[in-house]
Image 1: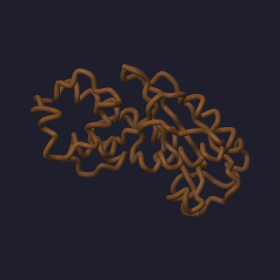
Image 2: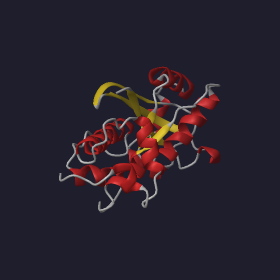
Image 3: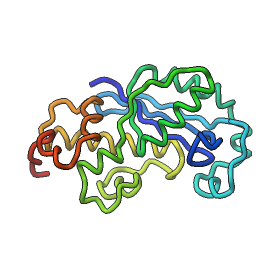
Image 4: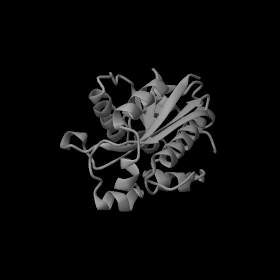
Length: 203
């Protein structure tokens, strides 16, 4: 299977359209269900981090002031990803920041995204929560570090992606759950799921 880049941003807020900026990015490159490379960096976008964000993430203004400029980090991140398709947990959020930060560098951001939130809702509707940490615990996947830091969250999302693809192959008989299939699955209505997946096999 081809490479898939799993990405996570930490930011100063919820919307780059409101002036919020990225403070940290991490990308976990997977191939054939295995992690083959990692990229992580804090970044200095020249904006203040609100106190409640520091409390959530542990990222301080002093930390980003000592970090490389955001533009430099994003150029390196884009080079690392290349043309690999991307995955994120709550992908609409990370995609907005990927596009906004690359646009500031004059770089295109045409990558397609699959979302592990949407995929988990299709495959695990019985899960008590579809938040990343809750799904990781519910599925018995390893936690790799502090939540709300980019590399730990990207690695947990990569673990979740691996479990989703494993279950698609073994429980639903999907021979090749590649990125295109994941994108089709996340758009699939509940009524159409049985046709796409077929009956689930025992775990």
